[in-house]
Length: 401
Image 1 (cartoon, rainbow, N blue to C red):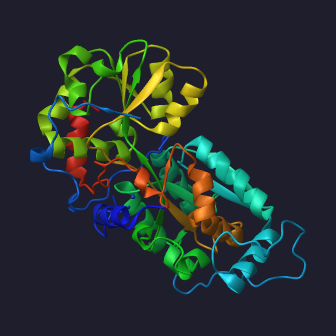
Image 2 (cartoon, rainbow, N blue to C red):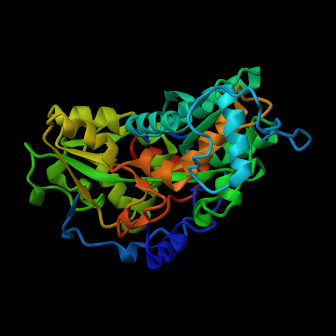
Image 3 (cartoon, rainbow, N blue to C red):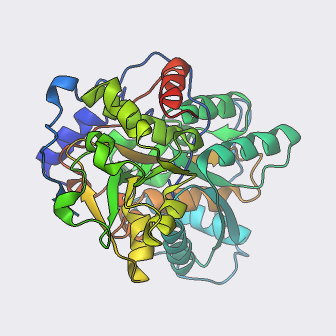
């Protein structure tokens, strides 16, 4: 559990303006919300570290529609003991468990890393005997698919999550307005009503369930630790020309947010220099790591630890460094409206479990930062900024995307 000092600091970074609203892997996001909110937590250019800084090793029902009754039924199927609760909630939680077990399964569309999704599905089924059918899909594609399904009245997912900020903000607002999504506040999940969920990560419409800090990866057969860039600015040094694997900023708003933080810290020239080094582009860090491991380039950025672990476990010569200034993917959780979901009670129970300390720590594992263990966030971590369409277009133009 994070210390009081750490939580106070993180609340400042992930505060009302910057938290989550800033709305993968690994995940991708939709087009940015048209808002002028600034990244007040992003460091100024005067705070940027010098080029010699050494690296450190290392995702409602309408107002007139009430959700289905979740009171316990007498014909719920046999399964795990319903007295075991993954969060506070008492009788309210027990009633939800019984209703969810009657439904038997839940459909989850997610942009979290596959390893995290698999851990969550296995842990939830083990706890409650309810199967989780999950589809791993990038953030922009997820939101586009969900909107298409919603417009045709065929929503396939009971629960979803994508990276926060940018297009996610407009997506959740539109979804609630159209009756496709249900505000988590209206859902009255036991983990929230009991006060067990950390308040600073609860946004009302959605909630942060994990954080994936952006890192820099390198091929250890190509570079030694003292030869690699110490920060995102140094990826623009001439010696790295032709050696860069870069996750395409056009693939997700989460990548746009990273380069906005880099620009705020180091200036336009820093981003332009990276683009001038003729990087190879990938849709997510997963394919980027595969290329890096195969020797197609020596430096990958941005990268997340969860994707690195999969290639490292296979013996790939890949290592990570933590830049002194970085942001990350703050994964938001959202619920399909009860009258639109196939398994509304199972979706609520799954959301409750993912937001509980037990379920959250199981899901995040060692390669993603749990909201219950924020001491693991990099010292120079800042919350992803909210940005305008014009700012997004500027970043994409820098990279010729």
